[in-house]
Amino acid sequence: MFGNPEKQRDLKDFILEKINKEERKVIDTAIANAAKAIEEILENGIDIAMNKYN
Image (tube, rainbow, N blue to C red; front, top):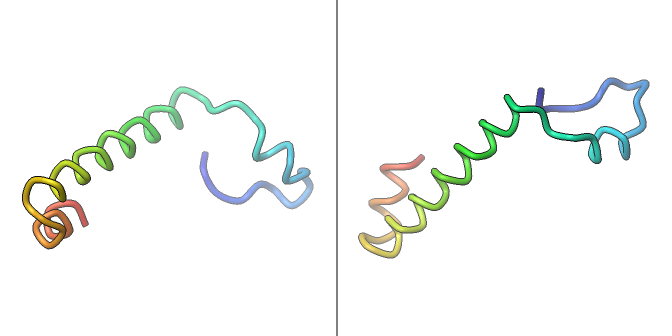
């Protein structure tokens, strides 16, 4: 999944490879959580958002 590539692989190939369905779900969840955190910051301030999303 995420993390460093095996030492034998070219870093370029690791970075540019397609994202699988499991990784896509993790990324989509992180994006959704980030959007919620931004909304919280705008509505209630950064301190409340940090306590809620950190």
